[in-house]
Image (cartoon, rainbow, N blue to C red; front, side, top):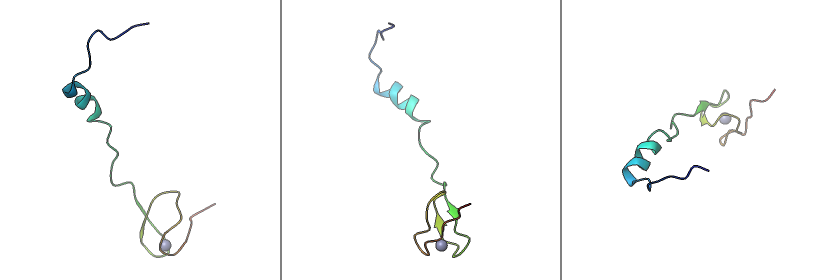
Length: 52
Ligand SMILES: [Zn+2]
């Protein structure tokens, strides 16, 4: 098994994790009340679910 020779520094670790953030704009619109809703979730305002 390959074993790392050096401890990953805080800077190195941060550089790697700089790409891990999720986009904040993962929101859709409820077709009934036009509220912002997460995809594949029931609308919190009117309870509408865009199913099959
Ligand atoms: Zn709604």
